[in-house]
Length: 377
Image 1 (cartoon, rainbow, N blue to C red):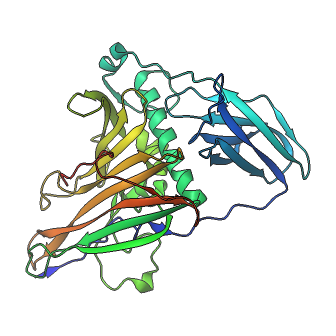
Image 2: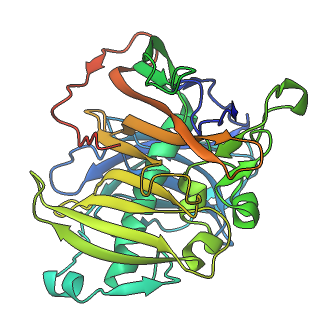
Image 3: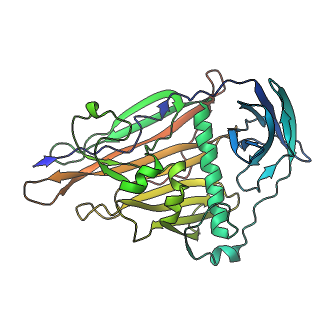
């Protein structure tokens, strides 16, 4: 008998290198303020859009409402501002000349997204929806997409330093639960759930029998199933939305009103897929958590046992981050002449203890109680 390793769908830690931005002379910076009070609007997604409506670059506004964008070419642009729970806002055309640097101040109204309770109750079950559609399900999906875009951009910019505690756990050789290995580290963030290009997942599903995506073949010493999870690209890819149905319900048992969007794969979709939930605050429409479970793994895996959870938190600076995560993947046991058996679980997780902007910013410690957190995995 031989147990095969499984490659858990998690990055080695929440640490990684920030991506660099292109250097160019056309720069547009400014400040977002709330009309009437001039209160800074932090944590908004600011898009620079060209005259054909194509996105050029994006950023997230800082605690002071500040933003800075760089265009690789001169021309006529618009700024499009996306805030969670508010309708999108777009400026009049802005002309940026060669080597020009401009600074502007923008005052915005709140214009909250309205979701009457009667619409939520009548939402039903929808397949093939898209963010931007007019019905309530699509509007909720739009808010979730905004939140993930803000969290992803905050990570990509690499301006935040995270102190994290991470852990991993695998069964001992006899199949009994092993000891958790814990690590603490400080660095910039990456998305904690490793995924693959959406078009690849559309072909062979969320579990792949081969080397992990991005790992050179010569570094793989043992074979085992690779478990991938969802990220922003995957959850809002056209093929994923076409292959999954959504429903919505109010979670009355939560300490604060929560809307739960459930997604499940269509039966016609092949390969290992995922079902799960997007959890949003009922009043602010802010994303609070994502859960997912693997479907179609085979009878050797205990039902609804493999998957993951991500918890989101809004910082004082306005940045939206993933502050907690857990992941669980089954390990198969292969026996000559017999079907695979269940050996145990490979598990991984972590939490953010402290966040600071740059290397010298004031740290913000994160308490355990103020974050949505479940531990049923």
